[in-house]
Length: 145
Image 1 (cartoon, rainbow, N blue to C red):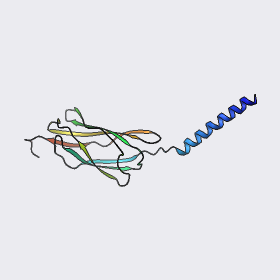
Image 2 (tube, rainbow, N blue to C red):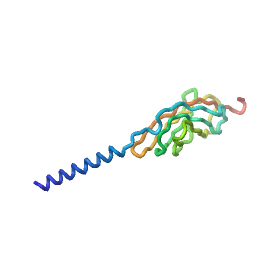
Image 3 (cartoon, rainbow, N blue to C red):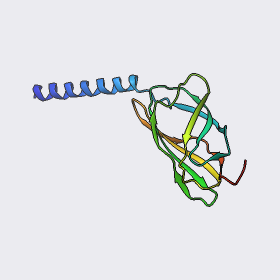
Image 4 (spheres, rainbow, N blue to C red):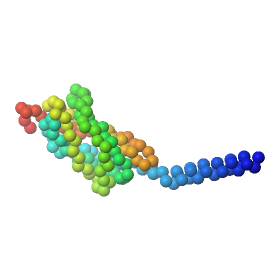
């Protein structure tokens, strides 16, 4: 009987230690506290050009690599995939990040919405979010600026 009691007490003690460790080491802070907007710097562009933007946000963590899925959505609602990326996500120092999104040469002339879904992989959790949309135009050879 005392062996069983010792086993139960030992198991309970180990379980309590694990819970205490997790409680004091888990950091639930999200990588981005607030999104302020995305400003397109070079619209209109030609298909195949990079779309240059400034992303304004309060980023508070630098230990969460980010995977981004990007699309350009035309005015008919058709989604055109852009090249995805995995990267550090920019520094938390400062509230602005200048970024360049490659566009495919297959985009037709017209207006688009840049939509970017982000998946942050933090040490203790994974967080998904969407950065604010941004509007841009693609021009063709005869469209002019």
